[in-house]
Image (cartoon, rainbow, N blue to C red; front, top):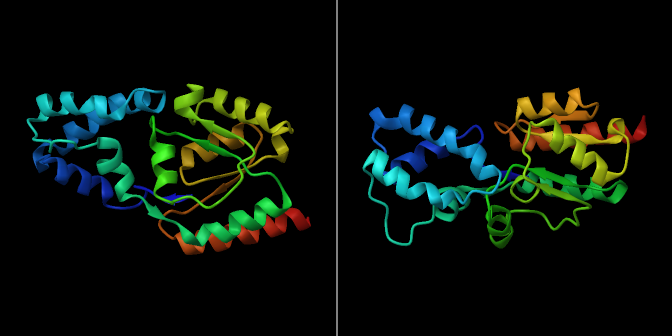
Amino acid sequence: MIKDFSATGKWGELQKDLGIKPEQEKEFIEFYDKYEPEVCLGREVDSLLPMMKEEFKIQVPAGYSFLKDGFVKRFEVNKSIWPVVKSIQAKCEVGMITNMYPGMLDAIKERGLLPDVNWASVVDSTVDKVRKPDRQIFELAKKRAGVPAEEIWFVENDAKNVKAAAENGWQTFLYDSKDYEGASMNLEEMFLKLIND
């Protein structure tokens, strides 16, 4: 739904802004990957800052928020998908399944990065304490949707999550974050084909 860090150099920008030296990059990624699952399940991402300061000897400006300054300010609007989502919503219910960090969805909404969509259901990893690609998140979303798995169409930009959804019997679409406009056009074409078949 948004232009996040996928297929960009934004992660490198974040590291540079934090003062992570090139020789620390591998260790920093390992550090982040270790704690990111906890953050998706409810740990405040800013709680990692004191650990980063100690581990990597970085100086973080007063008032710096890893959530807002590190991540959300780098996100961009994906305008190409807005009309597609609206046309899909006109024909069927639209829900959201997201691996978020605490407060991130609200911060994204505050910045106006999401289209004005009346989500039928939102499964947020920080609220529901389960994350993609865990099977339980798909079971929860299916239960909330109240329809059989084969009637759910999952749109996602991460191949491992698409694979997991398909393994749960969902129809899937891998959204290409390297080409937002092209992916949005392909998404609309696929949707029209689905509803006309």
